[in-house]
Image (cartoon, rainbow, N blue to C red; front, side, top):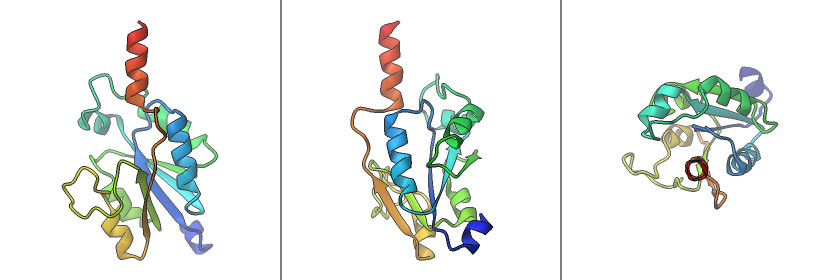
Length: 153
């Protein structure tokens, strides 16, 4: 990452579970990558996914498999697995130029307890960075995919 910075490249950070990769994820990650020169994805480890109350069956795919799939995408330059409930410490360490989340998060929300608050936005803004949200692709979610599979059994 220091090499990227020395070249003046703009570093974008996002995070998530990315359990069953779908069109919504790929569209989102491509758009996120377009906000800078390098995209780093913080990936929730398996224990943190369970702590997020995603459901007892989650994650479907283990962290190393999810990381491998993400790393294979052209839009992703690096994947970092984290085990905290939020990526706050990772964002603090990386100091990205751009922090991005899906459209269900509000880049202007300042209440740390609000569900739409973007963790780490204060850190990014403090160093003059940008905070952005990208609209979700309607009809695509891992939860809906899992429900659909359950109905077919």
